[in-house]
Length: 202
Image 1: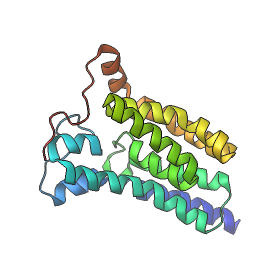
Image 2: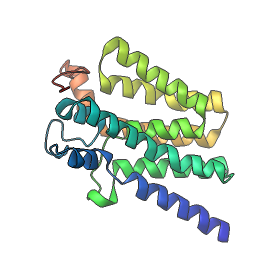
Image 3: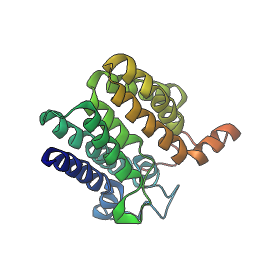
Image 4: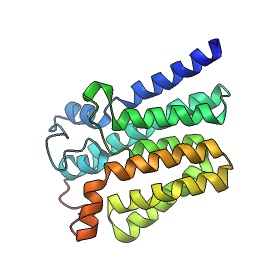
């Protein structure tokens, strides 16, 4: 029972950590506008890049990745089973997407998911990142690269990590990422989705 309480506590802490908005904090510290009020109104690195520049976007991306990476790495260090590592990772991801500190209105979750992927199983996570970077390099559309990479994530985890809990957890994140990208998907289908680097500041 004590172990169960401890494991649940770790899941809750992961959610609370994930709920911290790196985009909002970064923009405030750098004297930029609230990312929820400009551009796509999404508190994520892509939107911050468009109006805040590369430096602000970098810190936003780094912070969002670490929110997913650190809790799962702590779980690994504690020797937790795959199912608990998965739940910790999904909790951190849910914190970013539905943050308790910001009325449950958060980002789209891609960067935090990448942190979770890399922490769950480095090589499977690296396969997702490589897919993301390749599609972004070739097509230069951030949302499409994210959608393709996360769509393949459960397959990478199933075959590379051989962990069913990891495959299930990444599949849950994939569904939510697609849900959060509904407007992007509509823009992609109509040919209106912006490309990486559009209207950005240095």
